[in-house]
Image (cartoon, rainbow, N blue to C red; front, side, top):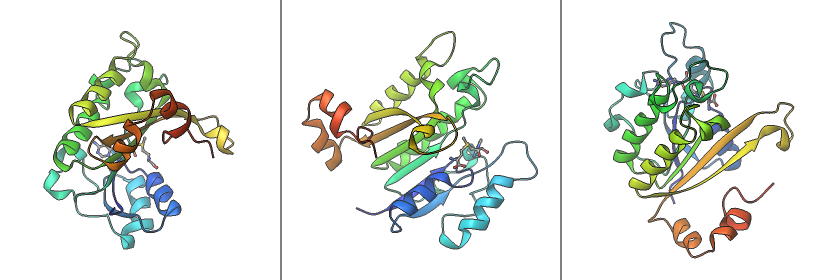
Length: 208
Ligand SMILES: C[S@@+](CC[C@H](N)C(=O)[O-])C[C@H]1O[C@@H](n2cnc3c(N)ncnc32)[C@H](O)[C@@H]1O
């Protein structure tokens, strides 16, 4: 398996650091990070400073992802991204979920998935995504699951609290792992009983 990552909504590169630390063979072939409406692109500058020499930073890396043609995004094995959470977050009054200004960025992920068809996807957001929007609880996560299903992916997800992994902050985040129904991982897992996947064999079942 090729070890190539595309990192969307890259921030300062948290996903990239995790993958590279897990196995230095992982190569980030494209990163996208753009802070809307800000002249100073602090996060991108930080990303560039750390990673420019290691690849993935192109002339399209510091652009609004909605303006980046998929032809400028290389093929990858895993697409990762912590997509903007303000529209799902309790901290945001009047959060509109997947229909909000930032929530709509989900559709950019969908656009890229349709074209690039990565075998695996790993996404992160606030745990409140599961209950968004407040007037139609659960709708947005349902839309995301349906999109992934339509594109031929199966999905595992879990809310993970950083405080349970040695960090000093109580930080609950939902991690969504999706895999193409054509992958060996799918073949292996599809044979198993659903409760076995959730409790023992799924990617989030193991506690380290
Ligand atoms: C939740 S943060 C991701 C943090 C990241 N995982 C990290 O390790 O730093 C979402 C990021 O998406 C970026 N962003 C927001 N809108 C964007 C857009 N239209 N195009 C590209 N990046 C965008 C934000 O600037 C923010 O850094």
